[in-house]
Picture 1 (cartoon, rainbow, N blue to C red):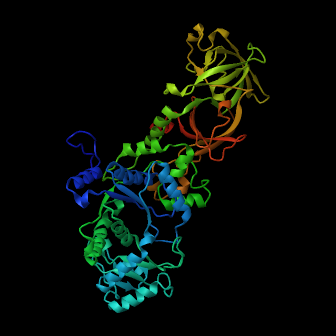
Picture 2 (picture 1 turned 180 degrees about the horizontal axis):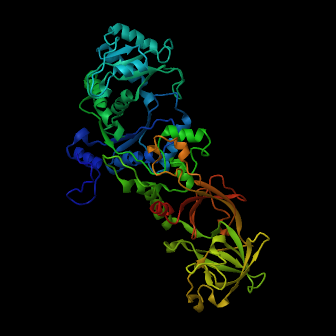
Picture 3 (picture 1 turned 90 degrees about the vertical axis):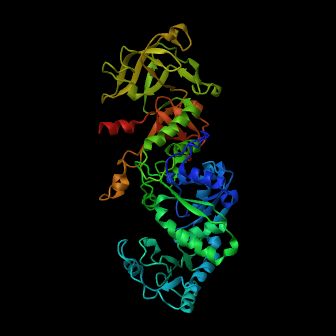
Length: 571
């Protein structure tokens, strides 16, 4: 089946290959025209942007075809799982804009799975193996070489049943024995070579406590859980493609034991996972970053977690649009982080309020402006949205501008402030620099200029052409804030491919710069956590979760332009 987008004959919509499968199944009346999907995360960490791709597909297919998508927690390994992760997963799905039909847990089916395993044992299709994990792995052989049967493979059914029950009583130590399906040790698909389907774990489960000591493996629990729930289209990433024959084997065996369930049968389909430049998607590596304090937590705005993107100022709309742009295929690849940034720029350009903020302030004094005078200048909230209206910003004799907007000895094409050159102060007047004041070390501490009172925005002479426009805030009317400049977490484009280097050594040392003493206009005094703004000429920012009145903190979501691409081109 082609994995390219397919255009139906009516020309209405370009379909991805999974949507084409769904439409074909509906046209053929498969599963009584029922569409049911599921999103099955393991609650052993926080969801990342890769999971967002799966969420958009699982929930999107159900929404598009009037079906149901259930949330099912794959909680078959109590060592790594916690209710903290359950809660965070639910929050992330809802934030992305999706609703589940039902909430299930693989642990809901522990008894059914246990009973099915007993059916396999009684049918001579499963046995208890007392070899070590190393011995089992060695005996499986190689894809081009048949495996060697376990010395316990032909154990009597009664003995297998007795030992299987002991695995769940606490009498058996972890690693002492496992239950294996008896399939085919010569099969070229290594997953068919008597896979382990139950192992012993003595760690209490976050839902079932100490009720179980024997826990099913993912390959055994996955398809059966789909079957119990009525899933029609089980959507997985490509690494599970080689598992699909085993998925089918277990489901077919289950149906053989329970033919009264009718003709219904779930099917697994695989799509490419999301790999993103300048980051890692491994839960193990992300957990390492958190535990070692290399980031501030799972929701650190540099992390590729959904909660990290939320805290950084990404919107659910921008993430959904990004996922829609990259699409679903059968080929793994790596997506440029710049495309994700482009998606949030598109979204915030339309929705973010424009405000003035000066991150590295230097004082500008208008020597001919009346002392004690204050004017209220009108500033457009968003030029992309007329309905957004305007707000007022105070203008006075003493202002702050960005230090980088002034150069005493400027090159010819420097169109910002320099002695003798006119520039416009946005929404205000045209001014001309007349001099500077320096400290004993030669650092500029004040800039002096004169304003032209006839060039106020809206006046006839305001149309006089000048090549530079600067943003500013009034020194007497601004607020002081902390601004955190976040950038890409890794300095290497594909840190996961650097096999000979510890991934932690590839962290970008400039991924976070904290600026204190930034000056922002008073309009932001009551800005609420996660509210987003465009700092004019600088970038898009949002209010951090720890921000509060009197201690405002802003996170840079994304710069106005993609500076990384330029650096890469130069390199």
